[in-house]
Amino acid sequence: VYKRQYQRRVRGRLIMSNKVILGYWAIRGLANPIRYLLEYTKTPYEDKKYEIGPPPTYDSSGWRSEKESLGFDFPNLPYLIDGDFKITQSNAILKYIARKNNLEGDLTQASLADMLGDVAMDLRNKITSLAYNPNYEMLKGSMLKDYLPTILPRLEKFIAGKKFLLGDKPTWPDFVFFELFDQLGLMFPGLFEKDFPHLKAFIGNVKALPEIDAYLKSDRVVKPINNRMAAFGAS
Image (tube, rainbow, N blue to C red; front, top):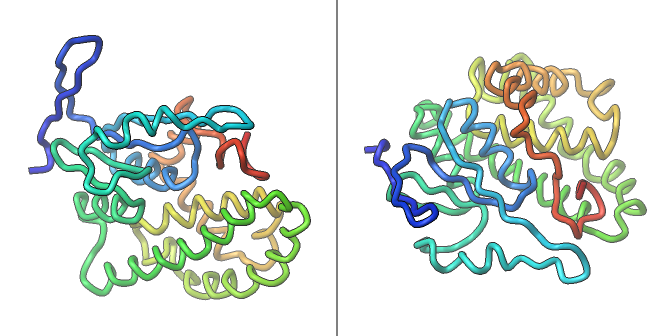
């Protein structure tokens, strides 16, 4: 049921493909955890990237011109097309890929994964709101002092004694936190070196997965974290 082919028209020719299509801006953003999961599950995919134009207009017509014509119930980025199945919303896409590849485990494991996904989204929202704030340099000290001490010690305690968040094998939230921790490490160099040895080991464990290691060393890696209007990670 998951191996239906989809049709695409390229230069007037109708072609068939077994690849899924991941659509997102030409940045890491919400799509990088999805890219990691697709890589880890060895899912063939097309990384469809939409560009944002330069300032002052930051033109997004490449996406807007297609947005209503792709057949999504709730058009948005990121999106995933798998045969005739189309879905948007980043966590829903991650869960779909995980379920398709039997990565969620039993009810308890799946529920814990859902919880971690929501915790990660809260963290991501904090990171993103700071990154896109024109007063980024002035405000990032407050995040380091006031917010991160409320969440990182909890995550450190949660993962202690485990290779990945839920045990010996990764599932979808692992790739979300891997991306977020990488962004935090760029924002605050040395953040995980002293006080968070379990989180540091976790980052190394995900990076050492053969599929992730190969992807990070490839020319397919997306480098900008955020779009052009961001104060952090736009290049």
